[in-house]
Image 1 (cartoon, helix red, strand yellow):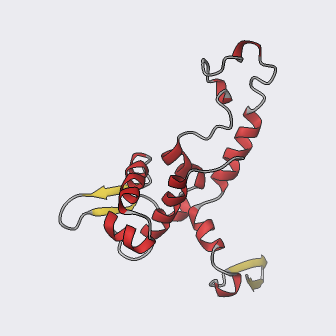
Image 2 (cartoon, one colour):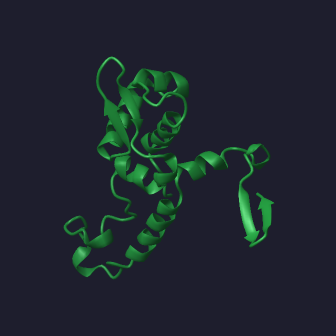
Length: 155
């Protein structure tokens, strides 16, 4: 089973929280608002900062803020910041020396297209998409969609 780590799941929760309320939020404040333990929030924020997804601010009014809007943060970036590069197997993308069957494996390189398809799919979904998907359609703010040059419909 392909499964994300709990830290990646928590990272999504933390990033969505940072998109709400105050622009700069503290680790204890995020923990209180999300129910995620503060040491875990601190660990997640450190990884997200290292991945360039959040920026930290020192001082009396310090804390963390999003480095870019949720719409500009693909799920793939969150996974990479917390869990490292997206790879189904150790031999994806030419990594060498990680498999004892490397020299005679008939599947060497064959996982690359599968891995790329998964990476592309995760890159196509932003955190804003995920946040909106959690809101039942009946409660979403309608978006105006141009169907034809003079016809406007609400979605």
